[in-house]
Length: 161
Image (spheres, rainbow, N blue to C red):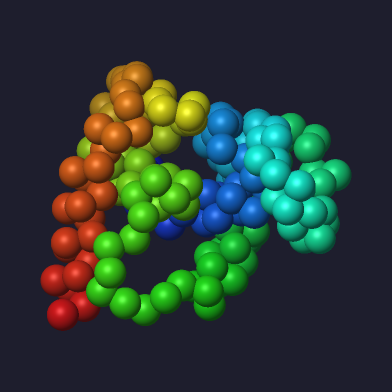
């Protein structure tokens, strides 16, 4: 079984795209050559948030299903890289793109193949296969991945420094 070793980057890019769309509750299915995301934008918390989303042209983007090809993910990653701040500060773990990046790093550390990911407000369910092909399911709080996030940030900081 070939395992995608860039789940952290792929999921971060998908998280960046979902942040723009205002989607925080969703499911991701990993299929050959693409990720399929099902979710709908959250209700804007204020008139200002609604106007911002409309100004970005995302208000009508409530179809529910989004496909991401490797090329689209690469483009999202390129655009996101331009916006990232180069600093030694610890990023916000609860920012969707950082949370998904952490989940991707977790899967990578287990040498696992992502099958599905279900993100809810406080919990996440991961369905994956190990390298023997056996399926596993984990239903955990998002906060339970915070130590993975800290370890991942520490490794990146040591590599840069």
